[in-house]
Image (cartoon, rainbow, N blue to C red):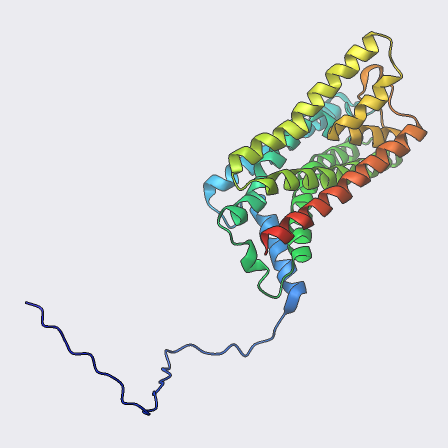
Amino acid sequence: MAVEQPQVQPTPGAVEQTRIHNIGYRNYDGPRLGRAYARRSLYSQSLRGSYGFGRSVKSKVLPMLLFVVMCVPALIMVAVAVATNAKDLPVDYTRYAIIMQAVIGLYVASQGPQSVSRDLRFKTVPLYFSRPIETADYVRAKYAALASALFALTAAPLIVLYVGALLAKLDFADQTKGFGQGLVSVALLSILFAGIGLVISAITPRRGFGIAAVIAALTITYGAVSTVQAIAFDQSSTGAVPWLGLFSPITLIDGVQTAFLGAASAFPGGEGPSSAQGVVYLVVVLGLIAGCYGLLMRRYRKVGL
């Protein structure tokens, strides 16, 4: 049977005593590395995570598999060129990413949500902004990490092609020029695709929705635009073909490299945009990149409140 204990009433005028217990925590006396170090750490961690490093074996399978799929066709082309003593590579450096656009889109769809969705789902974003990192640091680190991962994915097969071309004793000047043009093209593609993937992924904390939306934005739009371009070309509306390319990210990159890098166009009939139209393409690409960055800043300012 429980016995009710009488409550002791404090004596009027008595001073309440407060005790501080030492529970063993020590103060940090080391250097304060500040925002720059935090930004670099977040960039490094996000870049490693884009290929599954520092995560489970299961997380490494898809990005590594896609990386291999990107490089295998280049290896086969190099082997054929060396074995047949070809005078040139089967595919131009600037065309390779266009051909492999489905693999690139799948990579962005898988790693874009992985980069930001977990922070949104588990509501850890405000912890980043507590100190010393700020909204701009978080957005720049995430953007730069995914763009760098994409550049590694798209530039690796170009390196394979270039090394193979030199081993096949193809013209050094032509191959170096084409390789440089290809690097410029995939660098622009990486920045654009990273921005689009992160903006879509930051809208929802659900990774599955983010993956489906990124695939739709990158891959399905390319199929739709290519189909409409083919119809316009068959109907002898060749003037509309370059303008239709403005409505898909991959055709935007195709148009820019055709107008300014001397690349062969993948548009129906090989009719890429003119130099004047290429200026419009470049403005749209740069506008999309700036818009993606602005939308990410706006989104994370709200999340961090």
